Length: 166
Image (cartoon, rainbow, N blue to C red; front, top):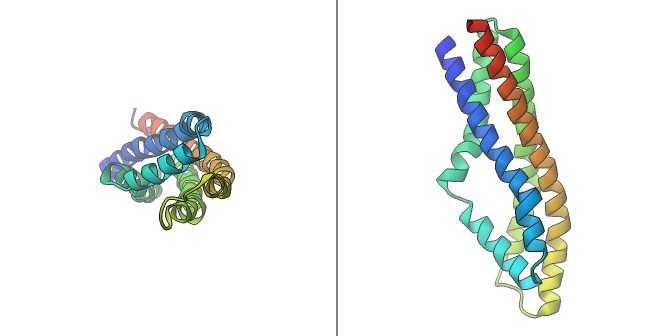
């Protein structure tokens, strides 16, 4: 069980780190960059990004982190690594927050933006952008912070786990 716990914790650090990096990059680079473009550019780009991201390269760490964090938490608890367990549990809770924000807020906003044909006319494009952008951006910051916190807790759990074996 100890080897499984270590492997799960290592994979959890990788997966949470990938998600933290993705959501943070949207916060400090992608959305500010798109924000400088026209309404048409913004709406088209976000619609295309939201289609393109639904692939195995995204979905594996996105969903897999939940599984490996839970496995690492169970393994840490059952092997008596309680200091590790609490950090992994904190990572899991923060990751669940990120997962809930994504599924409950950002994805429905993505779906509304993607509904129907691309809006035509300057007013329709501006309205679509307005309904989407401010809320999506704010909640993306929340999920970036939650994912980053999850990554930090998982990484510290891995450090503690490594020290216990030393």
